[in-house]
Image (tube, rainbow over all chains, first blue to last red; front, side, top):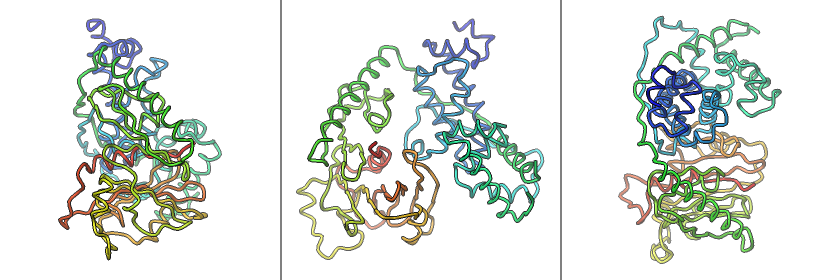
Length: 180
Length: 256
């Protein structure tokens, strides 16, 4: 099995299947690959608060514990992303438990320093509720439609739409812009 | 797309590139046998917890059920009652757990030994609008031996106790508004969160508790908290730890 995995990406169906069938090395490679894939989303959600490592660690632990429940091997990444978003929203759960997997991340300096306007906006984003922040990240960074965001967050589409509008209005007010 | 929306993309793009995974530390892989035993143990604990929950739902309404752990490999934490798919733990835990179900206020918590319900560690007024349930690690005799006369602040009885405080008739008041009305503390951290799908805030190092969740539940505001006094030489009761108190808070759930 290990030889077969040599030329296979850990997140491909074969890799996932091997991990689920008990191949310890495949499982380890899968978890490492997932951590790498999830970190950008966690970092965007965390908005520089320093909780990205813990969030990814907790998500990976969850995947590790529940991989037997994954219904479709090819859906591992969306499944893990959904776990991460929900852990971010329900911070109580992951902040109080000891994860079986932990992540050590490193800071990557921005190649071009963002201007003051962007920094103001970033500050304003951190003042939004976690629900609103998750919605903005999923919509504007992950590129999900409003309906898809609503599905990810488990709220009706109308709710997601009004929340998005409210969040944008608040951001405009916070950074002192009247544009529509 | 407006300028604001374009800049949002830029913000998230920058943040998403700000960290990279350096190392992933993974616990030793589960062996099939151990995993199976753990899973069977966890299922057994879930079944026992369900039986106990069913029994305690009958009057008298509020009581603690001691649930013996069915297997030394199963850690019956909040997941045993909260999630039908309880996850087996690799770490042995022969410790029995107590599922406490309160039908009056419609919540449950899991009490690690030696925690139990206390009628003496009540902290603050109990009124028809403000119910309170306290959990202590002290024995009844230990509690009774502490002189509480004249103690109104930082009482030894409250050290290491956990609380569920139920405020009714709160109307449209939000958890933040509720907390703001208590005052505040230097160094407090307030975070938005959800508890069982309900809007909540988590307040760390606030007042009057070092850790509390304030949850909006319809017309009610529920505070789930614990008290640890530090720096005044007050010792924790025997068997009380911050980890157990955290576990109690994490196990809190609303009854369906």
